[in-house]
Image (cartoon, one colour):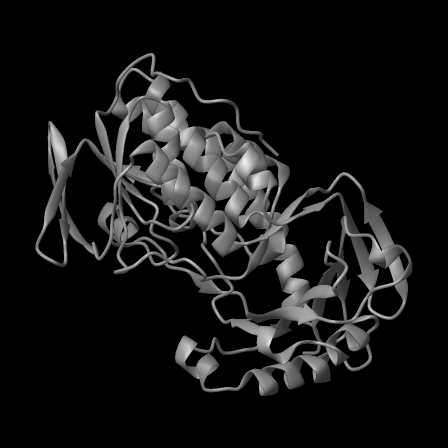
Length: 371
């Protein structure tokens, strides 16, 4: 896995004067901060009318992702959130440990925690974030590009960066025939439990993954000793909509998870003490297939808009942050925009496609459980 390096404080060449970053989630703010650190002006445009604080589940940021965040000056802030993980344990539900991987490390954190860190740093650096700016089109010129938004406003720059997720508007502008996201065949359900693990499982630095006969279970001891965080990936042939998810009570979702893990240990004990109010359901466990065109002229993609591996990879956020940093580095170091975007894709495509291929194998095992 590649590792992010420190960004130059000023570019050696100037391929772009101002970047319009479309998307204010994770990849967009990291890209804006990386560009700012490279001496390139950036402005972030978010389609939703308000900030997304408090939204999203828990994920693990791997060492390459932590290095990318450190490259934009967030090492201390990120170290203060989430929980350190220094070991991954693979189990057969009910039959003990199959393998331990002490080299697998990172931090588990709430998306909302990282989002808050990024938003604070954007404000501190004076990088503007515009809300209710849903991109509808662009007008390209030899000297620049204009972004058009649904509210009738426009913005001028030298480059449009699509950090607008798996349903990217920028991806469609680059290539109207580009593929969209694909459902993995799994839904995610997670929460907290008052159950306290014992023995080696109680170590707060270990994350455990267990493939059961009917679903996949992950869990780790909370560092404050109050219980256990858990999640389950459950096969489901048809992808539910967010509205369909909300129509089912947390009580019923928890009952489904308990039924799927009724014979699995320690899942059964963890779920027996699960806090119903903490249950979250994530129907959009999706992947991005290989995207033929990462860029065109004055538009380029970064993060989930161009590479969203299965959640089984544990690399979604890390790859997004790493690609954002690499894009800024290429824009700072190449002699012209075309060379910079080609260098960016050349550096990142092999990395992300290798991760996606490995994750697809694991995801296939999860989706076939109990079928």
